[in-house]
Image (tube, rainbow, N blue to C red):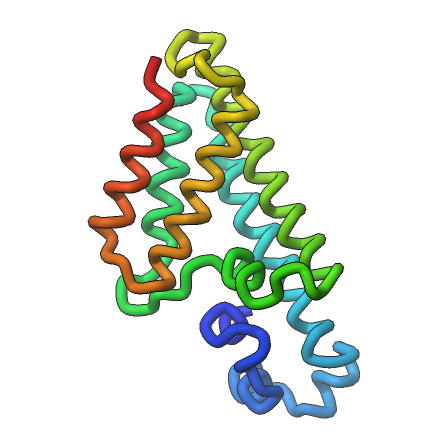
Length: 178
């Protein structure tokens, strides 16, 4: 997963994978049909891990919806190492593949849908508590915030500073205020 995340699917060679995993080429081929099969497993693992983190942040009962959203913003901003500008494996894959590969597209769509569902649930709760604007539906606001988070990952991958990315995210999240 780390190699694909750093280099992308097309730029990752089987030698990169064997060197990183310390598994011989033949052994990798015994477990995975080909590089694409391994990539799809890595993409699914990345999605599962990312969603797990968001679900954990969203499930904190003692925390207000605004604090949950703030924790998500902070987690997304601080996900990467300042010196390694990898962005998000899902976003990178969406940009690399477009809609050319059905299975990759399915993983990407699943990730986007799951993130929006988590955000929508938090936002709906905040709207019920009158902490978040009701000028837009919780579904619309969740789609908006998800787009802002995805854009932040593109900014990260293209070399924007943490300060620049944080300013965009702070502004986007401030749009939720009643």
